[in-house]
Amino acid sequence: MRDTLQDSKDTGTVVRRLTRERVRSAPTTLRPLGILVSEKSEYAAKGTAAPFAEAEYVRRLAAAAPRHGLQAHAFDPASWDADTNTVKGWRWTAGGWLQETVPAPALLYDRLWPDGPGARERSMAGLRAMRERGGFKLLNGSLPGKTAVLRALSRWPDIRPLLPPSAAYRGIASLSAWVRSQGGAFLKPSGGSQGKGALAISAAADGCWTLSGRDTAGRLLRPRRLPRPDAVRIVREWIGGRTYLMQPLLDLRGAGGEPFDLRALMQKDGGGTWRLTGVAVRTGAPESVTANLHGGGVARPPEPYLAGLFGERAAARLLASVRAACDSVVARLEQLYGRFAELGLDYGIDRAGRIWFLEANTKPGRASMAEAGGDAKSDAINNPLAYARYILLVSSGRVCHEFDLVQRSLHAAGGEGHMAVQPARQDAEYRRPQDD
Image 1 (cartoon, rainbow, N blue to C red):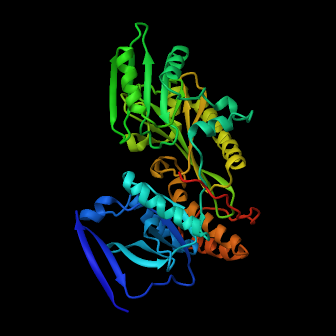
Image 2: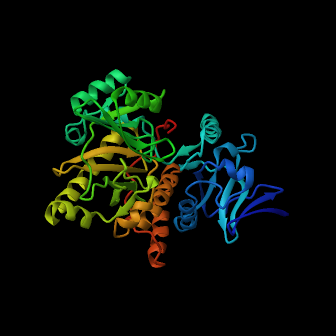
Image 3: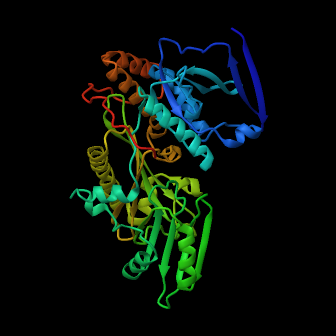
């Protein structure tokens, strides 16, 4: 079987495409896992060091996958060939990223981050086609917009005290009424992520509004104090036809005026059981309205940061409350929307020490877990793989002792696995998630 390699060099990294005369089959001892990515449009045009977003995370996933009895390929669903049921999968080699044609994996881990409308439509059209064909499962579920999620969670007495007042933006009249009653507003896209498109509005006694936020590309909009008619015009153009959520302008800032929040990563382990992987504080620049790492935020260990604001005893109580809230939130979200593999949960703490649940993310990042302490950094990589293995074994009717052997070998070899294997008590039925 003859291989033809084509290299594209950029900043010292080689991206390699592999064309083969026949499809390469995965080793029979490893079960296939597909990592959904959206290939960068600039890659097709001129080549780049990484062919898709989150390349380092995907590389680490693929490297750890064999230790969980898996073989992982990253692929854009747009590359799926319905006639042969194959995809153009990427894998990391010593020489860089290599692409090859492989059978389409049946279990898919969604890490799609399109770099523009064209890439999004291309990737999502491919994913829709795969799901219409049937036989494919998404490892993680999906959520509707933020407005719908908060409205649904407000039905539960144990969650309701954590939720800030919220309402859907329904035009300038609704926003003006909200600002009058609340003294300001925090606007965020109902379907957005990474803090992009967020807008903060504070009202002054003379009727002027001060606007600050981040545009849809994540660029900082520095505070601008404007007469209300001018501010209204900017807000109307800013929102356009998108769906937005209105919330109060909560005082979620640290001692230096920096915005901060807490990111808690909840993941299922190799026994299908929810675990709190870790909690980290994220801080933004004082002039920012968000603390997201993609917007220039910085992750910090939670204990010393909160102790500096509230004292050590209060910080310990707050973290214990956040951990308890995480258990309640994931349980309620699964009751409402079906099964999930992982969720990133964001919390704010105001100056009075009150905890607010801000939002849930179905495609949480990993960078903040480096500051969460303990095994959080490695568990954040290994838990999705362990849970994928669990799903593949349960859905195929296999017993879990085979997975136990994989875990034992991990511990014996000093690998990154730290998940306790538990009896398989959850079924592998999946609600078909909606597109994020």
